[in-house]
Image (cartoon, rainbow over all chains, first blue to last red; front, side, top):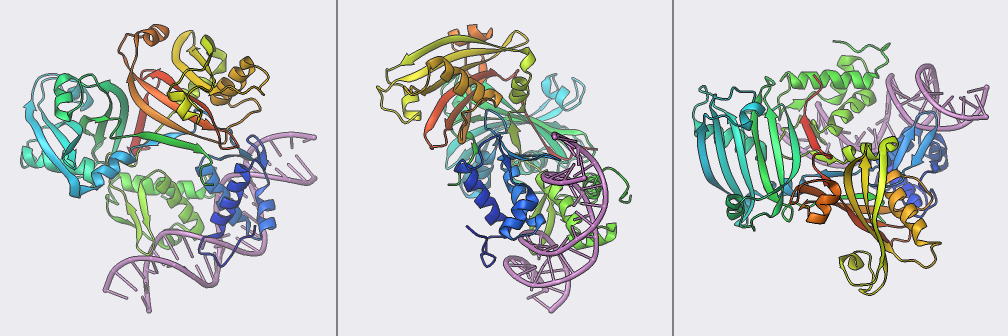
Length: 244
Length: 244
DNA sequence: CAGTGGTCTAGACCACCCT
DNA sequence: GGGTGGTCTAGACCACTGG
Protein backbone atom coordinates (compact mmCIF):
# COMPACT_ATOMS: atom_id res chain seq x y z
CA UNK A 1 0.00 0.00 0.00
CA UNK A 2 1.62 3.19 -1.19
CA UNK A 3 0.62 6.78 -1.56
CA UNK A 4 -0.30 7.70 -5.12
CA UNK A 5 0.72 11.27 -5.76
CA UNK A 6 -1.26 11.30 -9.00
CA UNK A 7 -4.49 10.44 -7.21
CA UNK A 8 -7.11 13.16 -6.84
CA UNK A 9 -7.35 12.06 -3.22
CA UNK A 10 -4.89 14.18 -1.23
CA UNK A 11 -1.85 12.46 0.21
CA UNK A 12 -2.93 13.14 3.77
CA UNK A 13 -6.33 11.56 3.14
CA UNK A 14 -4.70 8.50 1.61
CA UNK A 15 -2.41 8.14 4.60
CA UNK A 16 -5.35 8.59 6.95
CA UNK A 17 -7.22 5.84 5.12
CA UNK A 18 -4.25 3.52 5.42
CA UNK A 19 -3.93 4.15 9.13
CA UNK A 20 -7.68 3.77 9.63
CA UNK A 21 -7.62 0.43 7.86
CA UNK A 22 -4.64 -0.70 9.91
CA UNK A 23 -6.43 0.22 13.12
CA UNK A 24 -9.59 -1.48 11.93
CA UNK A 25 -7.61 -4.66 11.26
CA UNK A 26 -6.28 -4.61 14.78
CA UNK A 27 -2.70 -3.90 13.69
CA UNK A 28 -2.77 -1.03 16.15
CA UNK A 29 -5.03 -2.20 18.98
CA UNK A 30 -6.86 0.29 21.20
CA UNK A 31 -4.54 1.73 23.79
CA UNK A 32 -1.46 1.17 21.65
CA UNK A 33 0.75 3.87 20.22
CA UNK A 34 0.82 4.89 16.61
CA UNK A 35 4.27 5.30 14.99
CA UNK A 36 5.68 8.78 15.45
CA UNK A 37 4.65 11.40 12.95
CA UNK A 38 8.17 11.69 11.56
CA UNK A 39 8.42 7.92 11.25
CA UNK A 40 5.16 7.74 9.34
CA UNK A 41 6.22 10.63 7.14
CA UNK A 42 9.51 9.01 6.18
CA UNK A 43 8.09 5.54 5.68
CA UNK A 44 5.40 6.87 3.37
CA UNK A 45 7.56 9.38 1.55
CA UNK A 46 5.67 12.50 2.60
CA UNK A 47 6.63 15.52 4.62
CA UNK A 48 6.04 15.77 8.34
CA UNK A 49 3.25 18.32 7.92
CA UNK A 50 1.39 15.98 5.60
CA UNK A 51 1.64 13.07 8.01
CA UNK A 52 0.49 15.41 10.74
CA UNK A 53 -2.54 16.41 8.71
CA UNK A 54 -3.45 12.75 8.24
CA UNK A 55 -3.37 12.20 11.97
CA UNK A 56 -5.44 15.36 12.40
CA UNK A 57 -8.20 13.62 10.48
CA UNK A 58 -8.09 10.58 12.74
CA UNK A 59 -8.09 12.83 15.77
CA UNK A 60 -11.15 14.74 14.56
CA UNK A 61 -12.89 11.42 13.97
CA UNK A 62 -12.20 10.57 17.59
CA UNK A 63 -10.06 7.59 16.64
CA UNK A 64 -6.82 8.66 18.27
CA UNK A 65 -5.59 10.79 21.13
CA UNK A 66 -2.46 12.92 20.95
CA UNK A 67 -0.23 13.33 23.97
CA UNK A 68 2.55 15.83 23.64
CA UNK A 69 5.93 14.36 24.36
CA UNK A 70 4.51 10.83 24.47
CA UNK A 71 2.82 9.86 21.27
CA UNK A 72 -0.46 9.28 19.51
CA UNK A 73 -2.63 6.55 20.97
CA UNK A 74 -5.52 4.56 19.55
CA UNK A 75 -8.60 5.36 21.58
CA UNK A 76 -10.80 2.80 23.26
CA UNK A 77 -14.42 3.37 22.51
CA UNK A 78 -17.17 3.66 25.09
CA UNK A 79 -20.19 5.70 25.98
CA UNK A 80 -18.30 8.90 25.43
CA UNK A 81 -16.60 10.88 22.72
CA UNK A 82 -19.84 10.80 20.81
CA UNK A 83 -21.93 13.72 19.74
CA UNK A 84 -25.40 14.09 18.35
CA UNK A 85 -26.18 16.63 15.66
CA UNK A 86 -29.48 18.14 14.66
CA UNK A 87 -28.84 17.32 11.03
CA UNK A 88 -32.17 15.54 10.63
CA UNK A 89 -34.01 18.70 11.59
CA UNK A 90 -31.68 20.92 9.59
CA UNK A 91 -32.09 18.85 6.45
CA UNK A 92 -35.81 18.95 6.85
CA UNK A 93 -35.83 22.73 7.18
CA UNK A 94 -33.57 22.99 4.14
CA UNK A 95 -36.12 21.24 1.94
CA UNK A 96 -38.19 24.37 1.46
CA UNK A 97 -40.13 22.92 -1.46
CA UNK A 98 -42.07 20.60 0.78
CA UNK A 99 -42.37 22.82 3.82
CA UNK A 100 -45.40 24.67 5.02
CA UNK A 101 -46.19 26.57 8.17
CA UNK A 102 -49.45 27.06 9.99
CA UNK A 103 -49.69 29.79 12.59
CA UNK A 104 -51.62 28.50 15.57
CA UNK A 105 -51.57 31.53 17.77
CA UNK A 106 -50.07 34.99 18.03
CA UNK A 107 -50.39 37.24 21.02
CA UNK A 108 -48.88 40.00 23.06
CA UNK A 109 -48.45 38.49 26.47
CA UNK A 110 -48.20 40.77 29.49
CA UNK A 111 -48.62 38.25 32.28
CA UNK A 112 -45.66 36.75 34.12
CA UNK A 113 -44.10 33.54 32.90
CA UNK A 114 -40.80 31.72 32.53
CA UNK A 115 -40.18 33.44 29.19
CA UNK A 116 -39.83 36.78 30.96
CA UNK A 117 -36.92 35.53 32.97
CA UNK A 118 -35.27 33.93 29.95
CA UNK A 119 -35.50 37.19 28.02
CA UNK A 120 -34.33 39.28 30.97
CA UNK A 121 -37.60 41.16 31.29
CA UNK A 122 -39.72 42.22 34.23
CA UNK A 123 -42.74 39.99 34.92
CA UNK A 124 -45.18 42.52 33.51
CA UNK A 125 -43.26 43.63 30.42
CA UNK A 126 -44.96 42.55 27.20
CA UNK A 127 -43.61 39.82 24.94
CA UNK A 128 -44.69 38.66 21.54
CA UNK A 129 -45.75 35.03 21.44
CA UNK A 130 -46.12 32.96 18.34
CA UNK A 131 -47.01 29.32 18.05
CA UNK A 132 -46.85 27.47 14.79
CA UNK A 133 -46.76 24.00 13.38
CA UNK A 134 -44.27 23.24 10.63
CA UNK A 135 -45.29 20.64 8.09
CA UNK A 136 -43.15 18.62 5.75
CA UNK A 137 -44.97 17.00 2.86
CA UNK A 138 -48.17 17.98 4.67
CA UNK A 139 -47.21 15.93 7.71
CA UNK A 140 -46.78 17.87 10.96
CA UNK A 141 -43.17 17.78 12.08
CA UNK A 142 -42.79 20.18 14.94
CA UNK A 143 -44.65 22.62 17.11
CA UNK A 144 -42.65 25.78 17.60
CA UNK A 145 -43.41 28.15 20.45
CA UNK A 146 -41.36 31.33 20.46
CA UNK A 147 -41.21 34.52 22.48
CA UNK A 148 -39.51 37.76 21.55
CA UNK A 149 -39.39 41.15 23.18
CA UNK A 150 -42.17 43.50 22.18
CA UNK A 151 -40.15 46.28 20.65
CA UNK A 152 -42.18 49.40 19.64
CA UNK A 153 -39.41 50.35 17.23
CA UNK A 154 -40.17 47.31 15.12
CA UNK A 155 -42.41 48.13 12.17
CA UNK A 156 -45.04 45.64 13.15
CA UNK A 157 -45.63 42.52 15.09
CA UNK A 158 -46.12 40.53 11.93
CA UNK A 159 -42.80 41.44 10.41
CA UNK A 160 -41.11 40.61 13.66
CA UNK A 161 -42.69 37.24 13.79
CA UNK A 162 -41.77 36.46 10.28
CA UNK A 163 -38.40 38.06 10.09
CA UNK A 164 -36.88 37.49 13.43
CA UNK A 165 -38.36 34.40 14.83
CA UNK A 166 -39.09 32.17 11.92
CA UNK A 167 -36.87 33.14 9.07
CA UNK A 168 -33.80 33.82 11.10
CA UNK A 169 -33.98 30.89 13.37
CA UNK A 170 -34.78 28.34 10.79
CA UNK A 171 -33.83 29.34 7.31
CA UNK A 172 -30.76 31.55 7.63
CA UNK A 173 -32.20 34.39 5.66
CA UNK A 174 -33.21 37.98 6.23
CA UNK A 175 -31.31 40.90 7.60
CA UNK A 176 -31.49 40.76 11.35
CA UNK A 177 -29.12 38.25 12.82
CA UNK A 178 -28.22 36.72 16.09
CA UNK A 179 -24.77 36.69 17.55
CA UNK A 180 -25.01 33.59 19.66
CA UNK A 181 -27.41 31.18 21.20
CA UNK A 182 -27.76 28.23 23.49
CA UNK A 183 -29.84 25.13 22.90
CA UNK A 184 -31.13 22.63 25.42
CA UNK A 185 -32.34 19.18 24.54
CA UNK A 186 -34.86 17.77 26.99
CA UNK A 187 -37.11 14.72 26.96
CA UNK A 188 -40.79 15.58 27.33
CA UNK A 189 -44.32 14.29 26.96
CA UNK A 190 -46.98 15.73 24.74
CA UNK A 191 -49.96 17.35 26.35
CA UNK A 192 -53.37 16.82 24.84
CA UNK A 193 -53.42 20.03 22.84
CA UNK A 194 -49.88 19.55 21.55
CA UNK A 195 -50.55 15.96 20.59
CA UNK A 196 -53.60 16.99 18.59
CA UNK A 197 -51.63 19.60 16.68
CA UNK A 198 -48.90 17.13 15.84
CA UNK A 199 -51.30 14.26 15.18
CA UNK A 200 -49.57 12.11 17.74
CA UNK A 201 -50.91 10.17 20.73
CA UNK A 202 -51.25 11.99 24.02
CA UNK A 203 -48.34 11.40 26.39
CA UNK A 204 -46.06 10.50 23.48
CA UNK A 205 -42.41 10.95 24.40
CA UNK A 206 -40.82 13.69 22.32
CA UNK A 207 -37.82 15.94 22.24
CA UNK A 208 -38.18 19.45 23.49
CA UNK A 209 -35.50 21.60 21.93
CA UNK A 210 -35.25 24.88 23.78
CA UNK A 211 -33.49 27.85 22.26
CA UNK A 212 -32.36 31.18 23.59
CA UNK A 213 -30.77 33.54 21.10
CA UNK A 214 -28.87 36.75 21.76
CA UNK A 215 -28.54 39.70 19.41
CA UNK A 216 -25.36 41.65 18.66
CA UNK A 217 -26.02 43.81 21.72
CA UNK A 218 -25.78 40.68 23.84
CA UNK A 219 -29.43 40.99 24.77
CA UNK A 220 -31.61 37.89 24.94
CA UNK A 221 -33.81 38.23 21.88
CA UNK A 222 -35.65 35.01 21.15
CA UNK A 223 -36.69 32.28 23.54
CA UNK A 224 -38.80 29.26 22.81
CA UNK A 225 -38.82 25.60 21.96
CA UNK A 226 -39.55 23.02 19.33
CA UNK A 227 -41.48 19.86 20.13
CA UNK A 228 -40.42 17.06 17.79
CA UNK A 229 -41.14 13.39 17.70
CA UNK A 230 -38.01 11.30 17.90
CA UNK A 231 -39.28 9.50 14.82
CA UNK A 232 -38.89 12.71 12.85
CA UNK A 233 -35.56 13.51 14.47
CA UNK A 234 -33.43 10.43 14.97
CA UNK A 235 -30.39 11.24 17.05
CA UNK A 236 -27.76 8.72 16.08
CA UNK A 237 -24.03 8.76 16.73
CA UNK A 238 -21.49 6.42 15.23
CA UNK A 239 -18.24 5.90 17.06
CA UNK A 240 -15.13 4.00 16.13
CA UNK A 241 -14.34 2.74 12.66
CA UNK A 242 -17.11 2.49 10.10
CA UNK A 243 -15.45 3.05 6.75
CA UNK A 244 -14.36 -0.44 5.76
CA UNK B 1 -4.02 44.74 18.32
CA UNK B 2 -0.91 42.91 17.22
CA UNK B 3 0.37 39.41 17.44
CA UNK B 4 2.83 38.92 20.28
CA UNK B 5 5.40 36.34 19.22
CA UNK B 6 6.69 36.11 22.79
CA UNK B 7 3.31 35.13 24.12
CA UNK B 8 2.78 31.54 25.23
CA UNK B 9 -0.45 31.65 23.23
CA UNK B 10 0.36 30.44 19.71
CA UNK B 11 0.22 33.00 16.92
CA UNK B 12 -2.63 31.20 15.20
CA UNK B 13 -4.71 31.25 18.39
CA UNK B 14 -4.04 34.95 18.84
CA UNK B 15 -5.12 35.65 15.29
CA UNK B 16 -8.22 33.50 15.77
CA UNK B 17 -9.08 35.49 18.88
CA UNK B 18 -8.70 38.76 17.01
CA UNK B 19 -10.94 37.58 14.20
CA UNK B 20 -13.48 36.20 16.65
CA UNK B 21 -13.61 39.52 18.45
CA UNK B 22 -13.99 41.40 15.18
CA UNK B 23 -16.88 39.16 14.17
CA UNK B 24 -18.45 39.54 17.58
CA UNK B 25 -18.27 43.33 17.25
CA UNK B 26 -20.08 43.13 13.96
CA UNK B 27 -17.08 44.27 11.93
CA UNK B 28 -17.67 41.21 9.79
CA UNK B 29 -21.43 40.68 9.79
CA UNK B 30 -22.96 37.24 9.17
CA UNK B 31 -22.95 36.46 5.47
CA UNK B 32 -19.99 38.71 4.76
CA UNK B 33 -16.60 37.59 3.56
CA UNK B 34 -13.49 37.45 5.68
CA UNK B 35 -10.28 38.90 4.18
CA UNK B 36 -8.34 36.37 2.14
CA UNK B 37 -5.93 34.13 4.01
CA UNK B 38 -2.91 35.69 2.32
CA UNK B 39 -4.18 39.18 3.12
CA UNK B 40 -4.64 38.30 6.77
CA UNK B 41 -1.22 36.67 6.88
CA UNK B 42 0.55 39.71 5.47
CA UNK B 43 -1.36 42.26 7.51
CA UNK B 44 -0.57 40.39 10.72
CA UNK B 45 2.97 39.46 9.87
CA UNK B 46 2.57 35.71 9.92
CA UNK B 47 2.94 33.07 7.27
CA UNK B 48 0.04 31.84 5.18
CA UNK B 49 -0.07 28.47 6.95
CA UNK B 50 -0.39 30.18 10.30
CA UNK B 51 -3.27 32.37 9.12
CA UNK B 52 -4.84 29.27 7.67
CA UNK B 53 -4.59 27.48 11.01
CA UNK B 54 -6.33 30.40 12.70
CA UNK B 55 -9.22 30.16 10.29
CA UNK B 56 -9.26 26.40 10.86
CA UNK B 57 -10.12 27.13 14.48
CA UNK B 58 -13.02 29.37 13.53
CA UNK B 59 -14.23 26.78 11.06
CA UNK B 60 -14.16 24.03 13.69
CA UNK B 61 -16.12 26.31 16.00
CA UNK B 62 -18.73 26.62 13.30
CA UNK B 63 -18.20 30.36 12.98
CA UNK B 64 -17.17 30.49 9.33
CA UNK B 65 -17.65 28.57 6.11
CA UNK B 66 -14.91 28.10 3.55
CA UNK B 67 -15.70 28.07 -0.13
CA UNK B 68 -12.86 27.16 -2.41
CA UNK B 69 -12.20 29.77 -5.04
CA UNK B 70 -14.57 32.24 -3.40
CA UNK B 71 -13.61 33.02 0.15
CA UNK B 72 -14.37 32.46 3.80
CA UNK B 73 -17.78 33.61 4.96
CA UNK B 74 -19.18 34.39 8.40
CA UNK B 75 -21.96 31.94 9.16
CA UNK B 76 -25.44 32.90 10.18
CA UNK B 77 -26.60 30.99 13.20
CA UNK B 78 -29.83 29.06 13.51
CA UNK B 79 -31.21 25.78 14.76
CA UNK B 80 -28.46 23.85 13.08
CA UNK B 81 -24.73 23.41 13.17
CA UNK B 82 -25.06 22.48 16.79
CA UNK B 83 -24.12 19.24 18.43
CA UNK B 84 -24.75 17.70 21.80
CA UNK B 85 -22.09 15.72 23.58
CA UNK B 86 -22.42 13.18 26.34
CA UNK B 87 -19.74 14.91 28.35
CA UNK B 88 -21.96 15.14 31.45
CA UNK B 89 -22.28 11.37 31.52
CA UNK B 90 -18.64 10.83 30.63
CA UNK B 91 -17.41 13.12 33.37
CA UNK B 92 -19.61 11.36 35.85
CA UNK B 93 -18.26 7.95 34.85
CA UNK B 94 -14.73 9.32 35.08
CA UNK B 95 -15.15 10.22 38.75
CA UNK B 96 -14.53 6.68 39.93
CA UNK B 97 -13.99 7.70 43.54
CA UNK B 98 -17.65 8.47 44.02
CA UNK B 99 -19.12 5.76 41.83
CA UNK B 100 -20.78 2.57 42.91
CA UNK B 101 -22.73 -0.08 41.07
CA UNK B 102 -25.55 -2.29 42.20
CA UNK B 103 -26.42 -5.32 40.15
CA UNK B 104 -30.19 -5.63 39.93
CA UNK B 105 -30.49 -8.73 37.85
CA UNK B 106 -28.43 -11.18 35.85
CA UNK B 107 -29.84 -13.92 33.73
CA UNK B 108 -29.40 -16.13 30.71
CA UNK B 109 -32.34 -15.32 28.51
CA UNK B 110 -33.46 -17.85 25.92
CA UNK B 111 -36.82 -16.41 24.97
CA UNK B 112 -37.26 -14.18 21.92
CA UNK B 113 -36.91 -10.43 22.21
CA UNK B 114 -35.72 -7.35 20.38
CA UNK B 115 -32.21 -7.87 21.71
CA UNK B 116 -31.88 -11.04 19.63
CA UNK B 117 -32.40 -9.12 16.46
CA UNK B 118 -29.99 -6.39 17.49
CA UNK B 119 -27.29 -8.94 18.22
CA UNK B 120 -27.98 -10.89 15.05
CA UNK B 121 -29.11 -14.00 16.86
CA UNK B 122 -31.93 -16.46 16.30
CA UNK B 123 -34.97 -15.93 18.57
CA UNK B 124 -34.10 -18.92 20.77
CA UNK B 125 -30.35 -18.42 21.08
CA UNK B 126 -29.33 -17.54 24.63
CA UNK B 127 -28.11 -14.12 25.64
CA UNK B 128 -26.66 -12.84 28.87
CA UNK B 129 -28.69 -10.09 30.48
CA UNK B 130 -27.45 -7.76 33.15
CA UNK B 131 -29.27 -4.89 34.77
CA UNK B 132 -27.56 -2.50 37.12
CA UNK B 133 -27.95 0.87 38.68
CA UNK B 134 -24.96 3.16 38.77
CA UNK B 135 -24.72 5.53 41.70
CA UNK B 136 -22.74 8.71 42.05
CA UNK B 137 -22.24 9.94 45.59
CA UNK B 138 -24.84 7.35 46.58
CA UNK B 139 -27.46 8.92 44.34
CA UNK B 140 -28.81 6.72 41.53
CA UNK B 141 -27.81 8.13 38.16
CA UNK B 142 -28.67 5.61 35.55
CA UNK B 143 -30.21 2.21 35.02
CA UNK B 144 -28.18 0.19 32.55
CA UNK B 145 -29.67 -2.81 30.79
CA UNK B 146 -27.26 -4.74 28.61
CA UNK B 147 -27.31 -7.90 26.55
CA UNK B 148 -24.37 -9.84 25.20
CA UNK B 149 -24.08 -13.10 23.37
CA UNK B 150 -23.77 -16.14 25.57
CA UNK B 151 -20.42 -17.45 24.48
CA UNK B 152 -19.44 -20.86 25.94
CA UNK B 153 -15.80 -20.01 25.26
CA UNK B 154 -15.91 -17.26 27.80
CA UNK B 155 -14.51 -18.31 31.16
CA UNK B 156 -17.67 -17.41 33.01
CA UNK B 157 -20.74 -15.30 32.86
CA UNK B 158 -19.50 -13.13 35.67
CA UNK B 159 -16.25 -12.21 34.01
CA UNK B 160 -18.12 -11.40 30.86
CA UNK B 161 -20.48 -9.13 32.65
CA UNK B 162 -17.72 -7.36 34.39
CA UNK B 163 -15.14 -7.27 31.69
CA UNK B 164 -17.06 -6.79 28.54
CA UNK B 165 -20.21 -4.99 29.36
CA UNK B 166 -19.45 -2.79 32.27
CA UNK B 167 -15.79 -2.05 32.30
CA UNK B 168 -15.34 -1.74 28.59
CA UNK B 169 -18.38 0.31 27.83
CA UNK B 170 -18.03 2.73 30.63
CA UNK B 171 -14.54 2.95 31.98
CA UNK B 172 -12.25 2.25 29.05
CA UNK B 173 -10.30 -0.46 30.81
CA UNK B 174 -9.64 -4.14 30.40
CA UNK B 175 -8.43 -6.16 27.48
CA UNK B 176 -11.37 -6.90 25.25
CA UNK B 177 -12.31 -4.02 23.06
CA UNK B 178 -14.90 -2.95 20.62
CA UNK B 179 -14.15 -1.75 17.15
CA UNK B 180 -17.16 0.43 16.62
CA UNK B 181 -20.59 1.23 17.88
CA UNK B 182 -23.72 3.21 17.28
CA UNK B 183 -25.68 5.14 19.86
CA UNK B 184 -29.29 6.28 19.73
CA UNK B 185 -30.74 8.98 21.91
CA UNK B 186 -34.47 8.62 22.49
CA UNK B 187 -36.93 10.34 24.80
CA UNK B 188 -38.75 7.92 27.09
CA UNK B 189 -40.88 7.64 30.20
CA UNK B 190 -40.00 5.69 33.30
CA UNK B 191 -42.05 2.66 34.14
CA UNK B 192 -42.94 1.98 37.73
CA UNK B 193 -40.10 -0.43 38.38
CA UNK B 194 -37.52 1.75 36.69
CA UNK B 195 -38.69 4.82 38.54
CA UNK B 196 -38.37 3.03 41.87
CA UNK B 197 -34.81 1.96 41.10
CA UNK B 198 -33.81 5.48 40.13
CA UNK B 199 -35.80 7.11 42.93
CA UNK B 200 -37.72 9.21 40.46
CA UNK B 201 -41.46 9.74 39.92
CA UNK B 202 -43.29 7.30 37.71
CA UNK B 203 -43.78 8.57 34.15
CA UNK B 204 -40.85 10.95 34.51
CA UNK B 205 -39.42 11.91 31.13
CA UNK B 206 -35.89 10.62 30.73
CA UNK B 207 -33.30 9.96 28.08
CA UNK B 208 -32.91 6.45 26.80
CA UNK B 209 -29.43 6.05 25.39
CA UNK B 210 -29.27 2.87 23.32
CA UNK B 211 -25.97 1.33 22.39
CA UNK B 212 -24.95 -1.40 20.00
CA UNK B 213 -21.27 -2.27 19.93
CA UNK B 214 -19.39 -4.41 17.45
CA UNK B 215 -16.24 -6.38 18.10
CA UNK B 216 -13.19 -6.59 15.85
CA UNK B 217 -14.85 -9.39 13.90
CA UNK B 218 -17.63 -6.97 13.01
CA UNK B 219 -20.10 -9.02 15.02
CA UNK B 220 -22.68 -7.25 17.18
CA UNK B 221 -21.43 -7.87 20.69
CA UNK B 222 -23.23 -5.66 23.20
CA UNK B 223 -26.69 -4.21 23.01
CA UNK B 224 -28.53 -2.29 25.68
CA UNK B 225 -29.49 1.08 26.99
CA UNK B 226 -29.03 3.58 29.75
CA UNK B 227 -31.97 5.39 31.32
CA UNK B 228 -30.89 8.77 32.62
CA UNK B 229 -32.77 11.71 33.99
CA UNK B 230 -32.17 14.85 31.99
CA UNK B 231 -31.35 16.53 35.28
CA UNK B 232 -28.30 14.30 35.58
CA UNK B 233 -27.43 14.67 31.92
CA UNK B 234 -28.00 18.20 30.68
CA UNK B 235 -27.61 18.35 26.92
CA UNK B 236 -26.60 21.90 26.12
CA UNK B 237 -25.13 23.32 22.94
CA UNK B 238 -23.68 26.78 22.51
CA UNK B 239 -23.56 28.24 19.03
CA UNK B 240 -22.06 31.44 17.75
CA UNK B 241 -19.64 33.60 19.69
CA UNK B 242 -19.33 33.14 23.42
CA UNK B 243 -15.76 34.04 24.32
CA UNK B 244 -15.95 37.78 24.82
C1' DC C 1 -7.54 36.12 -16.30
C1' DA C 2 -6.73 37.25 -11.22
C1' DG C 3 -8.21 35.96 -6.70
C1' DT C 4 -9.25 32.47 -3.52
C1' DG C 5 -8.86 28.32 -0.77
C1' DG C 6 -6.40 23.41 -0.69
C1' DT C 7 -2.30 20.79 -0.64
C1' DC C 8 2.58 20.09 -0.02
C1' DT C 9 7.60 20.57 0.99
C1' DA C 10 11.91 20.77 3.77
C1' DG C 11 13.42 22.54 6.82
C1' DA C 12 13.44 25.00 11.94
C1' DC C 13 12.75 25.61 16.91
C1' DC C 14 10.11 24.80 21.07
C1' DA C 15 7.56 22.24 24.96
C1' DC C 16 6.84 18.15 27.01
C1' DC C 17 7.84 13.37 28.74
C1' DC C 18 10.65 9.66 30.22
C1' DT C 19 14.80 7.42 31.43
C1' DG D 1 19.35 13.40 26.17
C1' DG D 2 16.51 11.50 22.83
C1' DG D 3 11.95 10.99 21.30
C1' DT D 4 7.57 12.95 20.77
C1' DG D 5 4.00 16.23 19.45
C1' DG D 6 3.17 21.60 18.62
C1' DT D 7 4.20 25.64 16.15
C1' DC D 8 6.09 28.24 12.35
C1' DT D 9 8.25 29.79 7.95
C1' DA D 10 8.68 30.93 2.98
C1' DG D 11 8.06 29.42 -0.51
C1' DA D 12 5.49 26.20 -4.39
C1' DC D 13 1.79 24.34 -7.29
C1' DC D 14 -3.04 23.02 -7.95
C1' DA D 15 -8.32 23.49 -8.22
C1' DC D 16 -12.03 26.22 -8.14
C1' DT D 17 -14.66 30.65 -8.89
C1' DG D 18 -15.94 34.69 -11.17
C1' DG D 19 -15.63 38.33 -14.44
